[in-house]
Amino acid sequence: MPRIGVLLLLSREHHHSLVMARGARRAADHNDAAIVAAAIARMENHWHGLMAAHVEREERLIRMAGDKLEPESVTRILSEHSELRRLASGPCELEPAARLRAFADLASTHVRYEERVFFQQLQAHPCVAEDNAEANVR
Image 1: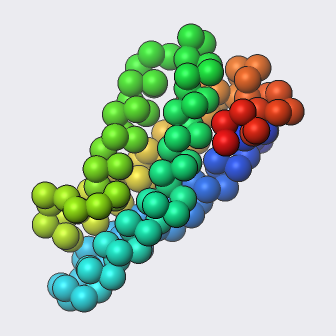
Image 2 (image 1 turned 45 degrees about the vertical axis):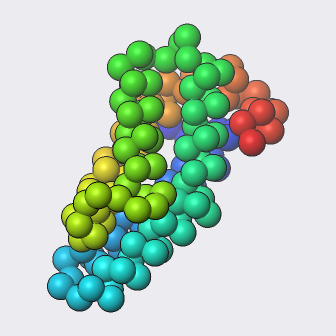
């Protein structure tokens, strides 16, 4: 289903996160500490430069449309947002390569779930279809 309103912007941002996840996975497969460290820095910059605001916009949409969304989907999305935040926003207890792999795996599955399942639910809600929906979630 073609995206409309704010979901169009969010879908475009998903592409950037999938590219970041692929790079994180590749870096994690290297045994070079400098490559892993650089990938961690890129991941954290990606979180602070794009993903944190993206997640906040999605969570605002959830609050706006929550009563019409499947509760299991909402629970999953919020839980995954929390885990992505833990992995990508700063220091983490995981070994660096494991952290990159965990981020890459979760970001990939999360984006695909949102695109295939969750955005279908959101797109059916009037708050997303309205012309001013984008302004309401910024």
